[in-house]
Image: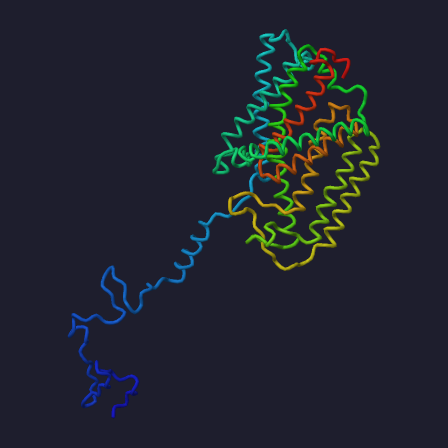
Amino acid sequence: MSGIPEDELFRTTEGEPYRPENGQAQIPEDPRETMPAQRWAGEALPREESSINPEPMVPVAAESSVWVATEAEVPQPVRIPHLGHMALLLLVLVAGFALAILLILIALHFHVYGVSSIEQTKSEIHYQLGSEGLGYLFTLLGCVVVFPMVWNKGFFAGVQWNAATALRLRWWLVGAAFVCFLLALLNSVVLPGPKHTPIEDIFREPGAAWLLFGFGITFAPFFEELFFRGFLLPAFCTAFDWVAARVDKQREGPLRVEGRPRWASGANLVAAAATAVPFAAACTLASKRYLLIGILLFFAWCCTAALVWTIWRRSTPAVSYQVVDEHGHPVWSFPAMACVALFTSVPFALMHAPQTGFSVGPFLLLVGVSVVLCSVRLWTRSLAASTLVHASYNFMLFAIMMVGTQGFRHMDKM
């Protein structure tokens, strides 16, 4: 018996051990040489996989690099517009109004409408509305060119214009505008504004009433909705949910049962503290009174938000949420939509405050109307729907003014 262990002996094709003679270990013939027609198991011809080991061997490093590349190719869903897009809109807005100012300077050079100085344009309705309208048009043109390259989709699809939805719900939307009109009538009785407002002086200029009427039901509602409900509202809703996700330490994933993300009470308290107190402070500052109280309220808001953030910042189980639905529409939590609707209504009302003499009554009315417009925009997922409500509301206000002044001929009866 040879000193070679049994398990190390060469074996024949029949499975019997090969025992060398005279102490010489003779290597048997390679069966692959004697049987060329038969292929060894695990050996494959070129461009042919083995029947026993069909998976090719891949080095670990190469395999991991392929996996990383595959993961990187999967695009992550993004809610648009977000705050970055809002900043880009401001740049386009500045460029648009810069072009409008350039055209106004050219008109001044040629004394259009008999105006030759900047001071005269402040009291000339054609220059006031013309500069604003041109700025809006140039901004819209820039948006139509720039944002499709950023979003990889059309501009109006990105802001959820959805004109078909507005057309289908047109009578409900006109009804919502009529409710806002009734609120305006009630507000004029309960919280009447000042007897004389700056906008009344503009109406008394020759031909200004009809120009304002046309501008107020076309350009104004379209571009105001585009800015406030098309960009500002969704951008801050996304920012709210992003902050709430970091507070609750949640991650993106499938939708919950109710179809929307739901945050813990800590995130909701942070949102409440971050919106309610600034709203009250803005209401106070809008009337140009009690400035010290407004500053104290703002300071209280900062302290409250910091305190709530500290108390409720704790580790919570990771709960998944989704940023877009199956149709690609942005998905926001209810606290985000409710708080941001109120939050964005304050600058909307402040933008119109100079026209009403910074009166508290009209300011609160505009906040309420803006909340209705935000609700319509979020409920219908249609910017065209909120634009229709806005235009219809303005039309009702101008219509009652036109009736009261007999076709804008007796402006002293306003």
